[in-house]
Amino acid sequence: MRRLLETGDLAGKRVAVGLSGGVDSVVLLHILAQHKLALEAIHVHHGLSPNADAWARFCRALCKRWRVPLTVKKVRVKKRGRGLEAAARDARYAILGKIPSKIIFLAHHLDDQAETVLMNLLRGSGVRGASGMPVKHHSNEKVWLRPFLDLPREAIVAHARRHALEWIEDESNADEAFTRNFIRNRVAPLLSMKFPRWKESLSRAARHFSRKDAAAQELLRAFLWSKGLRAPSEARLIEMLKQLTAAGARTLLEHDGARLRVYRGKVLDDSRAAPAQAFSALKWSGERSLAIPALGGELRFRRARGKGIDLKNRSLVVRLRSGGERLQPDAGRPRRTLKNLFQESGVPPWERERLPLLFCGDDLVWAPGLGVDARYQARGGASGWLPEWRR
Image 1 (tube, rainbow, N blue to C red):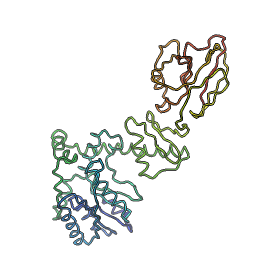
Image 2 (image 1 turned 120 degrees about the vertical axis):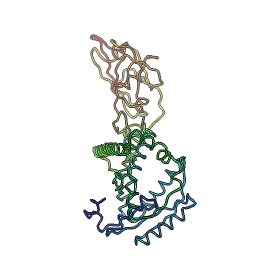
Image 3 (image 1 turned 180 degrees about the vertical axis):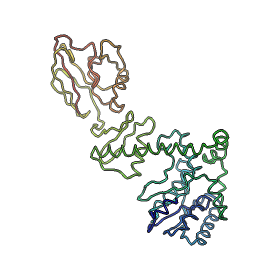
Image 4 (image 1 turned 60 degrees about the vertical axis):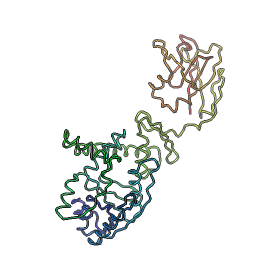
């Protein structure tokens, strides 16, 4: 906070503070109001508490006394299946994202950070969730700052008492139906008995994860650039990473005309994939090529001596997977399921269902990337056909 104010980074810029009236935001406003800034305060009136009007009056009186312009915005909080806490938070950020000020201060502190990380981990979040809240980030063409993230709440309260500041207490903080309150009132005291510095530890872990998250963002940007795709906004980039790194993700993202998927930790461009079309079995009797528009490609065949498919005047049929198929590309190894062979070869799940397979009756003869079944391989000096799938 001191470094930011002393370097003049805020000089001449409109600065806003999210003011709830609680001790955290009151202290933040108190500190900022002592500097020559184009400062304003924003109070979001959720209307969820019978005391909401009284909180707004308190904020007006406080800002009048400190000569800070205040804007009070009333919102209607809609849960929409995400819970009241999340809905209220979304409503606040929606309001703050629309104000003229380009720099917004928020009063989250060390305790908030530790609770956030713990909640995210309990929900099974990935790196993004484990990163907690950033000290500084850009979104909606604004800079969001949380200068108190390394400061425990007790230090903030101490500042308020030292300067005889007044603040309000939200009665809902005692309601343990809210996850954060349950963690704060029940779980945190137990953790403190065994791990006195658990908050600092989780905050430090969040910084480590944040660096990994930042690195992941840069990698995704580089990947998009390498494909000639436009860079998304930071907010969109974060959302793309969130979806692409979700556990067990088979997410399809569309960006700038491209189709992006993730498999085994890698982002793949699936733009060449043919749109799903009805496919009917095709007979192959030795042609050099076989166009398959429904799958977006072409099967090509070339003659080879001692390898490939030994046709022996048999016709083959092109079909798709139906499940349970087995293949033995190596005579020295057992016959295995096509699923296991595809997994071993790193073929993404969404591609497996649209790959052309060659069958002789019910026997699987060949699969792209896996090879020819041992029973149908041309050996010695026998002439064979080598298939190749091209898209």
